[in-house]
Image (cartoon, rainbow, N blue to C red):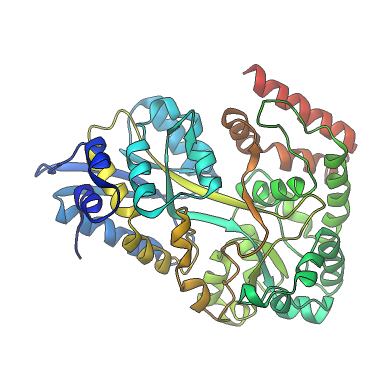
Length: 448
């Protein structure tokens, strides 16, 4: 495998001499250079092996001995690892962060503006959502990562929807955006989704979406609230959750949850995957990981899965996302080598291999990379992942947006939205009381 350094990267692209000077090369790795890398343990079978091979080959070509640890996100182990290393001032040189986590440690991380700006000069901008998370106070505190970054479209059993609800998602969201019928797309709203939920549940195939302390809960509830104009805080720090829109969504969820599995309040991030793969679930909000496992273990299920846009609300159509980022700790003794590696992993050629290995799961944060052919070609069914990249009017967000990062991070990591919803839909709390509780929690975030 051909290896490339940061110098090679910048020489061949439009980053130019200015970026080269900022990055401070030439760098020649010492014979005994060692680097440790804490990575997210990928859901998609085989993706870790390909990534490990790419990183190992780069290390051999650059005389860097790299130790990789794959850390699961189940049980928040990845988040706990980052927290422990931050407190101890020791651990991996490079660590993967989920969504907001880099915000908590931005003062303990090596600035990444040189690498991010070099990539932007060569390939164009990162998407708005990735920039919102990684660029804070005018500097890149983390680097958007392609590995593990994903979005949350519907992952739907075409046969169940068509047979039991009379809804053809393949017709509404075909594998060619030019063939979309605007009237049909606009008709896919949260009211229509509730009507479908009632019908598939009556047939014995409920929809599955967790309402628990996990990222999957945030990543479908946040967009649902946003689509009705409900946000916990605005970008000026004002608490905005106590609103008619919030109450409207809670009332909606009181009805919707009647047509979902009763154990959703105890689900983890893998539960909805298992629900769809089992053949019991009719739709989930998820990237293609459930499909990828079904393709291996339950091919008849996989052949019926179609990814498509989420429902529209009165204030727009929002899709959840979970971008991963990379951080380099300030305590690392090999910051330049670590940046070399991250720049190599962010290169278009390398990302192409990683997206392919993830079977389309890994969603690139650089906008110009979204022309990868995998989403058009992979199957079965061919075209089933075409709508995984946003093709229509959806806006990618993370729960907590558009708040200032220090507050949005707490909305997400303290599970404000699923807890508020769960208080009503499973705990019997009155909606207004649950909203006032949430407003009180937000006041606490501001007080610090």
